[in-house]
Image 1 (spheres, rainbow, N blue to C red):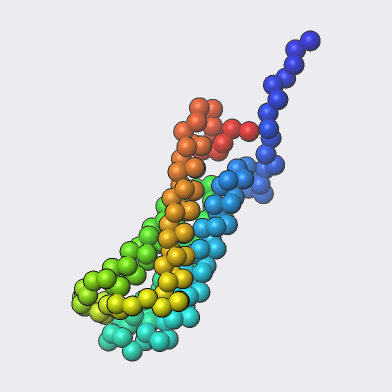
Image 2: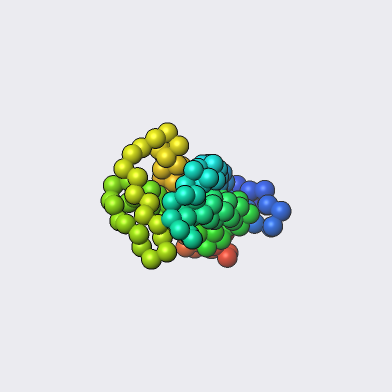
Length: 162
């Protein structure tokens, strides 16, 4: 009597795909890290409005908050797409790069960008840097996991085999 191979089946998501538990965890961690980054930047923005003329550091903080929110939503809603993960990694890494650069280097003004040099750490700045580092790491891990599952033989449209 022939037996059918036993496969672990994942419950399909509403969009018809299945997501591995590891990818779901990375989605949540990345989204939370980006949301923390966004909330902290939005909270800090008013205090930085006087820095710069025209384009202020406060405005840049608000833009960062909005872009981080968008990246968090994309990872949650389109977490099966490599582009969502790449965008989240880019947002988190660029924000982390900026906070580290302007903490340790007095770059001065760059075109319309104000001089954002601030050679100190304080709790909200530290929390922002940690959230950005976590967001970068988890977004890169999500992208790698998704790419690995897409390159497996027999995977359809980049989805892990069920």
